[in-house]
Length: 393
Image 1: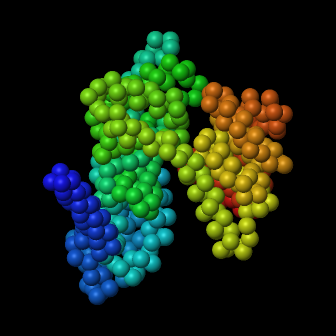
Image 2: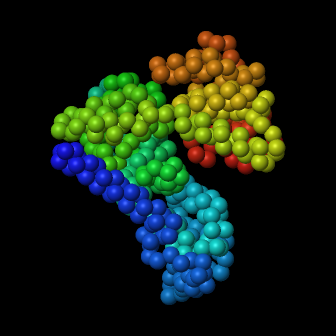
């Protein structure tokens, strides 16, 4: 009986601690106690009179939410003028929440704090190609915010990855994780390494070197990983094997937590994009996705999961793309077609090879946004690939 009572007491104590933790988290998020007392509705004018920034001896205040948004964007432009991707992300987000600055001016200070990441790691990644040549790439890990929990975010291998783009990705990951309801902070990482046209052995050697540099900064309840552009099963398996070798004392469950999010629900982002598009069509045009011609770029997990859900909704996905060009089927890709593309991609094949085998239309020159017309665009390749001119019907 005493054993049962003790066990139950420990259990009750754990439950109380968990409830207190959740209560504290909820309280801090809603009331803003992380940043001091939060009586914004009663102190609107007080917060508006406070300088959001001070430059050249001049206090910069705002009288409206729009002015606050402009001050915040100007600060990013002043400090990091060459981080175009991050500047664009802050511009878009600040405009989206400018009405909140109007009603609760103190949130402009929260936004200001969030613009600066907690930590940005940049490191050299040396590796050797199959010809014995020494190669060097640049690696990144931005641990953007741990306000809600341990860091969590994907790894991207792409030749265009830079300080600006990795900061933008960390910003967006932080916001995305925040709305899931889970206690997760935001992070992102990767390298300007291009896995295309690299042998499996070269990819493994690069991943081994990359993890050697990254391993001290990631781990369960510290910073956990998931896949992103250019990082598939081969890359993640190589990274995990290297981490196990470097930390042979790590428990299996800790390693599973570090890498396990990669396989929980890989289609989540794609399915979510379609659900969002469906709601947008209903709200803006009082219509559904059925029979809508949809243009997709990319051919990875994100693009394929979007296509699968579109087919389920009765829409018509007509394009995919990769580094070799884009493939087009005016009648729409079926689930069987999408499965075939996944099979080819799993074997490091290209859409050019797929088009030849399936007798689909294929174009190497130009972009699908310029040459194919449709009702809805789902850009799944890389940020900024679709501009206003391309989107204009």
